[in-house]
Image 1 (cartoon, one colour):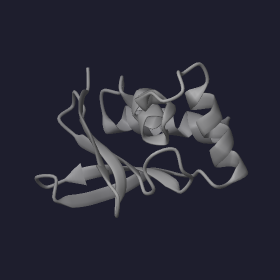
Image 2: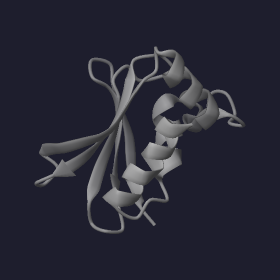
Image 3: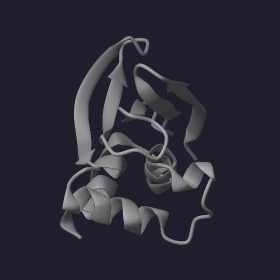
Length: 114
């Protein structure tokens, strides 16, 4: 099972969470605005001691109609005011069971195809 790091909120940079997958690979889930606001959520592979970003595997513009629909689906049934109800928390919850980068890509592709 993936190891979910702490949720970090930075007023200037938004919010992010690093996840270590069972494969040893690391990903970063980033919400550029943080909180419940719009903006975008990206999922990026982290390389070389966590200092260099690799491939961006997924990006969701929460200000678009499609992005709002994805977020609504991910937060359906969550309790308002909880971490899972935030964009960052919802995306982390969606991919937390992934074991590898390939699993993350497949899980994100499901979001894009719905």
